[in-house]
Length: 453
Image 1 (cartoon, rainbow, N blue to C red):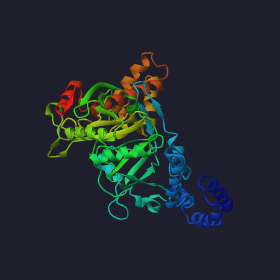
Image 2: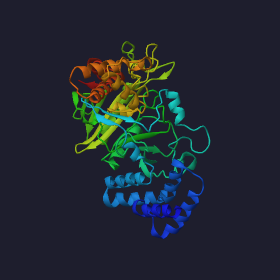
Image 3: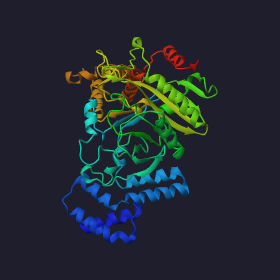
Image 4: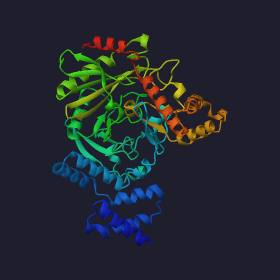
């Protein structure tokens, strides 16, 4: 029986993982040892497919070959499929996550594989390592590391800004071909002019992907992974489809398209086919924002709790050139909003209390897995005309609004009514994150920053 399993695995590896026929006897013996070692479940799978996968040097070599002969899209498709086939990317699990588009243009997914971190400090602790081998869970030293079930992790080497980086796919990705570009050196997340240059370097190499960087501050995306990294992949996110609603001009480059995006958050878009123009404008905007305070609007650049303003830059490459979106973020807190003034407000915490990071700020909301069961029960309460029980008090807003939608007759299907409610709440959360609620206040800031209206 065991020998049959091994033979099946060897056949699979030859078909899917490019196992050389010359190595099949050796690999069969290695599998026999692994399968007799007492490992079970995910740890056994990790060990088996780590053994059957190409070595990291072979992955680098194969990726470079495809890149040279067939182009970057073919190379990333090969690597992604390889990581699915070697079971590092849990695509079979990801495909079971509920996901839908809303009428207001957002995309909602319930990620049942991802743990929920409602407390930023616990989120940070869950992704860091206190001493020992590898300083955090995304350091390159994790490649093949058994104690963290990374035996089947495979990455490829990159150069961004003339420095060594690497690219890997997320095992529980939020979107199609969700990957992470990681600085080879374990240094803190930061955003400066070099960051902007790196992002453009990346889309020059992989123009079919978007890439972006979380604001490097806790509560707005920077607290979970302290290691310098960017996120990107092969999906067009809702923000990318948004249009400029109000054009502005940079004094140095008045011919470059710059404008305020028609978006619930506060976003400025810069479009040009010249790298230096995009970087200069984006960096001047960054400098202006990180030093800006307006107490009347609740915007405080720095106080006794530290620095509060940051940007989340994200870029795509189109037939017209570079398109960089600069999302203005603030993690300031107040007595009324101890979790963040520009964070999801308390009435929405039953749906989303975690940090609103780079991906949500672009309109793809990753909601906690617990909601699948909780919202199903609320749907049942509504259709059975049952009052909301006390243990579901945190969902009163959801219950009342979904009930009103359902009873209005607009939705004959309670589940469709609930999806519309989720879309509405997530849109309101994005509005919460907007640092400028009125365009006139944003235009005043931009004028002070040197832009012309």
